[in-house]
Image (cartoon, rainbow, N blue to C red):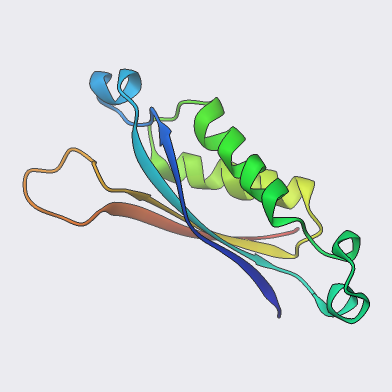
Length: 119
């Protein structure tokens, strides 16, 4: 299946279990793979027959910055749910990375990856 890829979307938000995570914004990086048939958009060269990337960005931004969740698993689930509700995609794979998670040693990021299909 075809896919649209939005990679490395960075937002500042307050998600986490600890009190300081709920009050001090930190970076969250989101990758989204949207699975859909792109033939009609490609053949017609018409954005109306596909998905507008900037609107998807705004939808993801609204979820990341519009709510506070304890778990990045919940954040990823809410992003996937919104994409499936708002856009004509068959499935969405969402990765959320938290590069400043409270960890006891050096690390690149903590993250989750989910795949959700339209039911």
